[in-house]
Image (cartoon, rainbow, N blue to C red; front, side, top):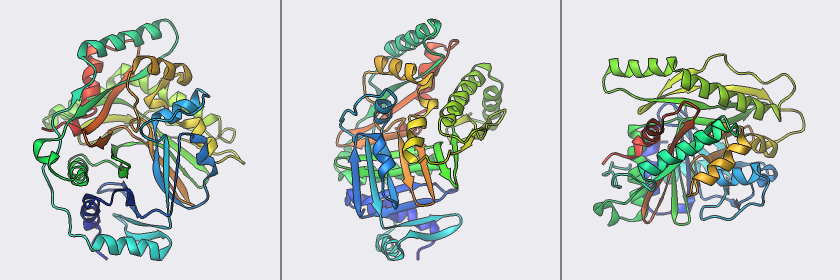
Length: 408
C-alpha cells in the first residue's frame, strides 16, 4: 500500500474525478485518523433525526443538519429542506490511515478495494483557490441590530446566551468556473485542510452539493459506554507575531466574559448528558483547556458521562443535538430566538458529520464548515452573545471564525 502521507492526495485526486456520490471522507488531518469509504452499500435519507436510533449495525458515514436537530428539540414534525436533514451511507469496509499506520475496518476485501482504487489515482497536485472573497448576506447594521435584539431577550430574562450567526457566500473565480464542479471542490478542500488543518474535517458529496468541514469541536464521542462532549466557547484570533499571539491567548484565558460564556455552556452540556447518564457519572473539568488552531485560540472542556443502561444512539442524539455551544442556554427558548432572528437556514453549519462503527460513534459540530454548489461556497460565522457583548465586536468575531475560507 501507499505510504500514509499519500492517501490524502490520492483521495483528493479521486474526488476531483467527478464520481461524486461514491466518496465519503472524514479527515483527521495530519495528527489524527482519517477514514474513507467508496461506493456505499446502502443509504438512509430522512429529515427525522430519531431514525438514527434504528440503524442496523455497520459502518456509517454521513451528516445531520442543524434544522433536523431543532425540529426534534422543539417536538415538531420534520420539515423537508434543500439539504436532507439526515443522510447516512453504510459501507462494507473503510480504509483508515493516520500516524498509527494504515488499516482496514470492516470487510477486508471492501477496504482493500478502496486502497486499490486510491492507488490507481495519480496524487493530487495543488490548484488555485477557487472562490472569491466572502460576502455576507447580512449588512453590518443589520447584524448589530440582531445582536441588540438578543441583548433585549437576555435583559428580559428569556435567555442567558444566544449563539447568533450570519451566512456568507463566495462565487467561483473565473478560472475555477471553467472547471468541472468536482475539481473546484477538490481544490478548495485541499487548500483548507493544508493551511488550517483540523481534527474533525470532512469531504462528502451529495446531489448537486459538496460538504466541506474543517471543524475542531466534538459534539459526542461514544465508546465503551462512555460519552464525551467537548464544547468550545471563547475565541481569539491568532496573532501576527509570537508575542502578539501569546497576548491574545492570555487575554482569552483572563477574559471574564469568555469564562462566563464557557461556564454556561458547560453547565448546559452537563444537563443534556444528565438526561441519559447513569446516576452520578457526569463529570467536567474545573477550568477549560486552551486549544490553539491555525487561525484562532479556543477554550474547550471535556464533559463526560456513562450512558444509562437500556439507552442507545437515538436517545443520545435526542439529548445532545444540536450542541449547546452553538445554540445557547436555555436550549429550547434560545433556538426559538435564533429561528426568529436568522433568516436563512444553517444547514450543515452547526449540524454534524457522523461516523458510526460497531465500536464507537463520533459526531462533530460542523462549525468552520460550508456547502459548495454550482454557484459557489456558502459558510456561516457566529458567536455567543451574552449580556455584556458589544454588537460590533460580535460581528467581527463572526467574521474571524470563517477566516480560513476567505483568502483571495
